[in-house]
Length: 311
Image (cartoon, rainbow, N blue to C red; front, top):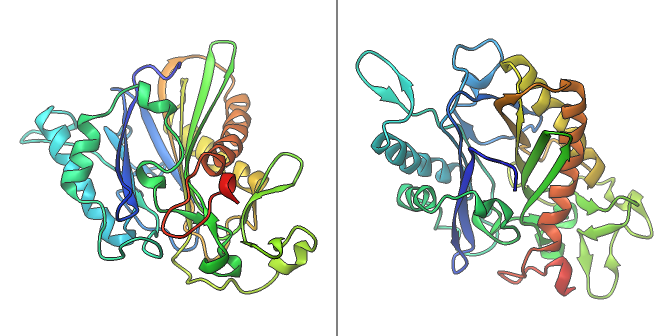
């Protein structure tokens, strides 16, 4: 594990099939985000635009519960407030906590979503060792993929991680995979997606079957990701890192970035070493691709939705 200065905590509720994930960030970071999805659910993302004044954040929250889950960010605010971490003003220190949600109300208990208390617990449990945890955990607990053919043919998504190191530069990706599309490997083979017992993967023999209006709601799908790096970037370059990392979605998901997805990638630089930004951008796209695959191959069957490893 090379991601020094970062720590991650998860809250997982497998009974109600939801959860949240908090990334705590080092001082002096540069953070931005890129939103390619048509139906994102988020807070504090506008201030991450390259031209906005705020340069650093103290934490990023990824959570289930759709828009209801955004209230969990208050628990992260409380935790950071107790640590006196945040943007210093003359009268108070304000924690900066961007957050984004996935729609996981279609399995489990749709009346239950992560709370501020749950997110506070995730912060307290955060550690660098948790960076290696994956599968049906945290914000990846209740997510699903391959919903273009309807939720009854969907398969479990999850939370995935991947890291790439070149010389002293590293990039780590965290992906919460709740896509309308199928997930494919490097050879284009479907590894998780629309599937039935009798037919197997529906698009395996005829990819054109995906060329239909998805049988899901327009706000019921999202891939949320965070890429972190030790390479020194300014805020505009960090925005470009998030933007270029979206190429990883197209490499691992078919279809990707649709009108039915609320895809968001956050990017955080700890600004520790000098390295060529363009190389880091390409590393990020590949790390995202690997993290998406990692998420689905380690997911568990929950709520009557089958996982890739149990089909």
